Image (cartoon, rainbow, N blue to C red):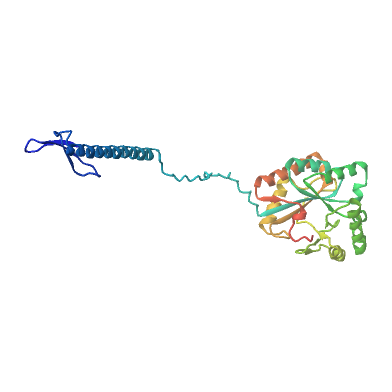
Length: 319
């Protein structure tokens, strides 16, 4: 809406909106004239319409502004489980098993040297196999108690060395009758409730396993065959630690260490890289000989070349 003056000095009011694009109202007119009345009514209507339009525009604009201010865009929130990185502890590799294996075996117990032997074995934590004579277990209360302690020792494996030890060392007579030999070993197994099927023949270095068949004296072969046929594993030895008639060791621990090395180097064992060593319990009743045994074990361990196993882990045994 605006005022302007024409060339003849007449003043007009110009009103413009979307309903009345161009409405010109003279400002100096007789208010009582019919034209003036008509014009005033027209002007009043136009002004009213402009007011309404302006009001609606303001309301619409305000609402639209409020809508814009209060509206928001939906935001996609992706909730993801946090990734947890677990660092596993480094487990050290198991010690590599050494190529050579030694089986320490001791015959003729329980007797006066057995307790010293077991004391050394426990101290050095070395597994051994003891070939037990049945009659020796029942020889005295002390021997029976020693046997019971062997059963409960985690480092000791018990094997069968017959019940009578070849009729108390009557070897020729003993091996002449194979059935008697078989029955003597069965008696030992039954009386001592042995679960092991591993035996060693008294006074003879005989082998009967799935892989080794060896007999030192051929007159004992039939008896050995009978044992094997009845599901016994007959295990002899590769190297013996000898003693004299006074039950004294003939060799020092250093001597035996050299012999062990030589057996492996020259492949003289019954099974390659497996050596069965024979010793006897009774020798270790002597304190000096017990010391030699301990030193021998310590020196073997120090070389860090050997595994120590019980005879039940020897290759080629029948179950």
